[in-house]
Length: 193
Image (tube, rainbow, N blue to C red):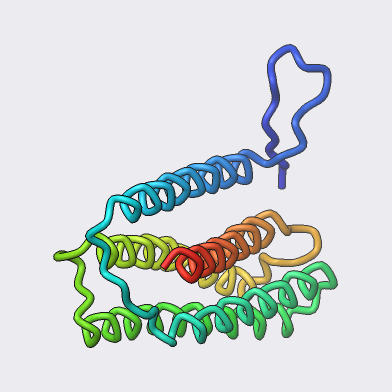
């Protein structure tokens, strides 16, 4: 299989990055910019007043533990792929996928908990921001779970191993990014709520 790498015209050496990895990093930078602008808007809007104060749902703590645990299992699968241990790759990918779905279910329950506290998407900016933060993150997490399932299927087709790590590396990068993004959002909300 021929390796594909991006080249800069006129440069003496090629960039040692697969074009798909480069595209992933551009996407990650875009997502960072979106959430940075949203958190900035949150702070500005909060300082204007008319801000509903409420406690964050406890499920956010559980979801934080779930996302950390999922990253641990994905990293275990990644190390197993480097060692060509197909059984551990598959097990790690299955557990990570299940934990990813559990996180999404937890997000759904967090919205139910917010509704029980009379915090709705409309009516107060504090609630609106919270739903936008968690909803956008959940949307990206759905794409992450799909990516996990693609890598899991690839592992059953013997396409994930030490000599073919590009897709696995991209999946690990994206999933760890989503985990870090969630922890950032949760800490931001704890400190600014």
